[in-house]
Image 1: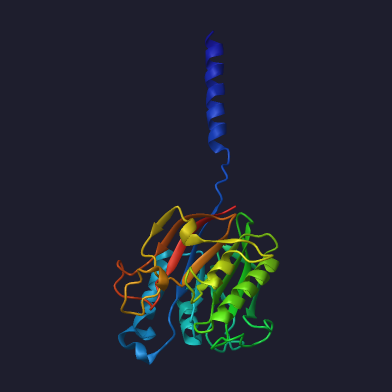
Image 2 (image 1 turned 180 degrees about the horizontal axis):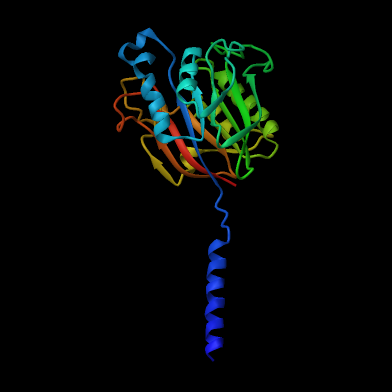
Length: 288
């Protein structure tokens, strides 16, 4: 009787311990930041880059994203961020080729990811060479990469871009081209696209980023998120509160196999100063 009772207790404990250590797959957690940091411009006065650069990198350290997509990063800005955030690797070339012109760099944590592939293409009729597309006012690019998580082996495609601010045809055609190419590069991998698209959610450009013929459907992470924090708008021009849907031109798009947990539109209310004329956006996601 006593031996039987002891044996039952031992079996019960072993069962409990065994269940406790069974792995539960809840996806691979990832924090993604998109941030138009605003070029260096004397016209910005007290908001010039050299007054706010330390606050920009302090913000990045504060939220500690795994991957960052930046827009409007000139060579001095990119170098400053790289020097300050040495725990990140930075990839991507300038829109005028090599190190020339504004960059759309991708920063990723070196301790978290291994770089498998990367590249840049131009948003134009000749995407494999330095060029201006359609009715765009400037050259525009997409910087893309395939990253592999060092621990889990999980792979994903991450892309960052900045669409033209004037050419409506260019924005529409850019969304079609970007979706087509990224779908080809991903080959079934989860996709994350960050950027300043200079287009509202009511635009044709936005609609094609979500769904266009022959490409992987994407979701707007702001809409997909279980929890949303901050205003709707993303551009405030230094003086305005970015509260309206029409001022929402920065996005994080994700393929539907990604679970979007939280989305934050940081409107600087908890910061000592405005860091840019755009709000930085970051999201916490789970890869499949």
